[in-house]
Amino acid sequence: MGLYKSIFFSSVKAPIIEELSFRLLLRPTRFNVSFSIAFFIFLLFDTILYFSDLPTYSIRLVICLLLFFFLYITYNPLWLSALKITDYKLLTITSLGFGAIHITNFTTIDKGLFFIYPIYILPQIFLGFILGIIRIRNGFIWAVLLHILVNGSVTWHKFFQ
Image (cartoon, rainbow, N blue to C red; front, side, top):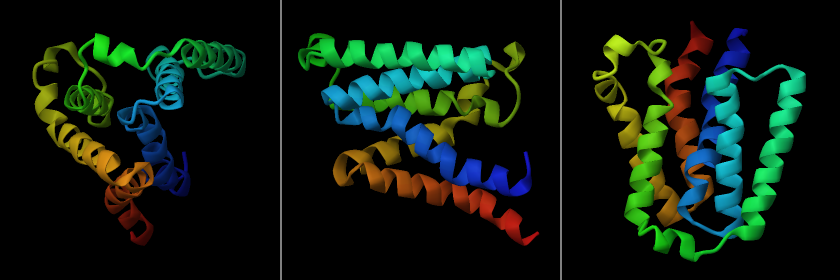
């Protein structure tokens, strides 16, 4: 990947993708829950199972669209209360998940370092809490913009090297 594509991906595209996966869910509406879960599963296929060629891309897109429609049709707002998932628990779960996807930012997954990974991802977990609170209090777009700013502050300096 070229320098400009890499900078664009890490500072703009990745924050939008991550916010759609993790922060959209913090206001649990029928659409938000359905889209967020289906989109996360779509990304998980590529990230963990490495399904990125065109035929499998099409198959996972269809599967995730079907999952979205299934969740959208069957969604019941009482699910979260039946599972006793409060807003704080949902914020904690999404923040931990946000931190967990960033484990590979540092190294490929090594079983010998498994117990050290929580230390590696503490800043991302903390950022997940901050972005989640901003999303809840100020709205989705502000969490996306702050995430772009944070990632951009780490990558934009490469333009000037």
